[in-house]
Image 1 (tube, rainbow, N blue to C red):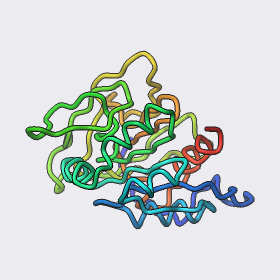
Image 2: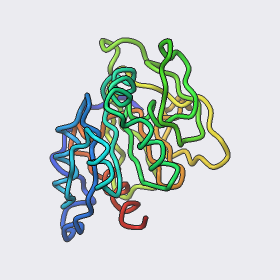
Image 3: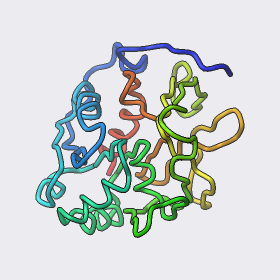
Image 4: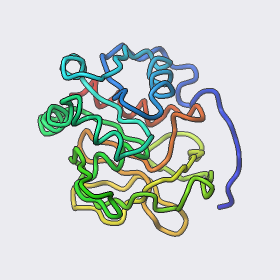
Length: 215
């Protein structure tokens, strides 16, 4: 499937639907694409909290971990005493959605991690950082995601990770034509290698909010 560049301002599944009830959800606001996720969630009717401190984490029913630099998110989460509380909430069943660096943060195991890099874990998978090379190798492609209604997902990959191994409880949602896995879920945890928040693709955010409602 050849990459194409199609921009949308709203997800097709969001059109014509009544507003989603307003769960309190957080966006980890230490570094990365925080504003884009906040906008996507609010456009779906969610009450959004930017999470920088443990008290803010305690106030939300779900968390988005944005794209950015995974090693910086790791260091800042420890500096602000958030790493332990996030791990605890994940173990307790809090729904979490991670994109790009957020996928790395949710992986139980990493390849090509920097020295001392830690993750929050929760997803039984092995992820390779920067699997597609430097930012100059960024690309866009349409992906078939059978669990989502509507047309293919237009996916934006920027210094993206890739899932190299998954455990038995992990469900693969999408893969590139060459078979490399780029979207997964396990229980209330959802992760993508790409950035749906960057091009108005709301269906993954809707799926995340459905899990927050059900938790």
